[in-house]
Image 1 (cartoon, helix red, strand yellow):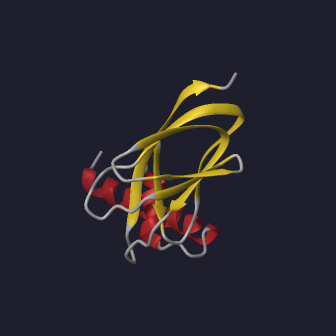
Image 2 (cartoon, helix red, strand yellow):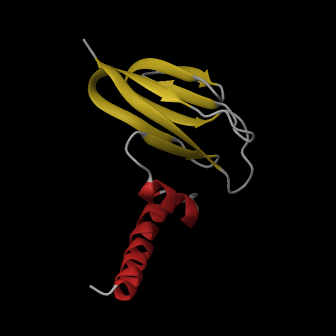
Image 3 (spheres, rainbow, N blue to C red):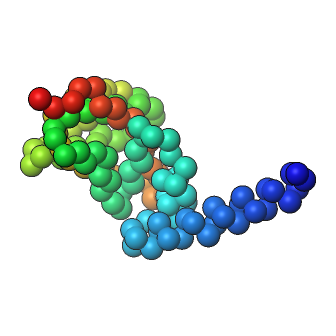
Length: 125
């Protein structure tokens, strides 16, 4: 297989797939839609324009969320099963919930996004 013919096909498929994500979130930029398209399982991306649902299970789970401690990170607001908490940069928190949504708790610069991780540490009772 000739690699020079494969690369344009891959780039074209990414270009055609990403706009459909951008249309679902009307305030998302193309770059943010592409970031979400390529994020790994257990990762989340948030920007100042939209909330992101991270977890949605049929029964409650213990979910661990972590935010890196880097220079331009702002805290996250975590809403889970009608409760709220704030996650500070460089920290992790564990919440028991069926549904978790996150958003920025502070202002991000235009075009910036936050990347963090989550994992299920225990299934509900």
